[in-house]
Image (cartoon, rainbow, N blue to C red; front, side, top):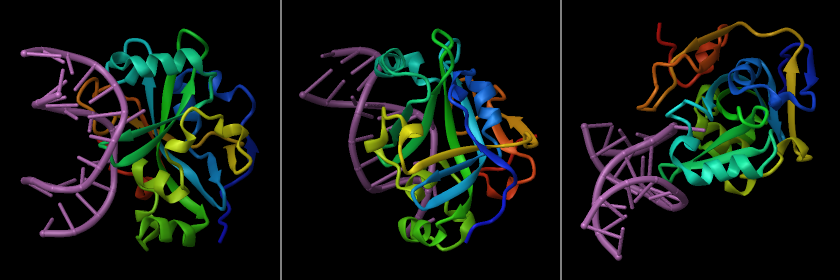
Length: 198
DNA sequence: GATGCGATTCAC
DNA sequence: TGAATCGCATCA
């Protein structure tokens, strides 16, 4: 089953050289595909490598090493709570790097596969959270520090026109949670992980 | 070496 | 409301 999203174009080389906030916003409404599974990105978060206490680079030496050793666009896949893999992309020109966390998709293709991987039947339970969507797509630690954009099974297409976006605070963090660095698709609120706080 | 916690999800 | 479960930072 493939649902029409709109006119899409492959993300241009260098897309992730923009800063994390611009990338996170621009990815709303984009199509992300991995293997036979795909979805429309409806929720992202930005983490800034400078001045953002919630960014991994703020406390984790390994994250700083990752930034120093990998080119922009590299996948940063993080295992959190020892349970769930979270998918990020390294962004920004050198020195103003950051990360974009992919937090939710509206599934568009490969739903039977997602249902099997997730052990959930309802479409809204498949990709409505950062740990859920990696499980649904089959992304895990094997993809950490790899160039997913060059992966033959991976595809990222941007909408011809920007999607309507709402910004509010990031989810599940204790530091700098009030910064409006979460972005959601204004017309796809039923597919996101948690309601927008007004 | 021990301890504590985290960008979560699910069952109880 | 709490368990699952692991990497990493922090402190002894």
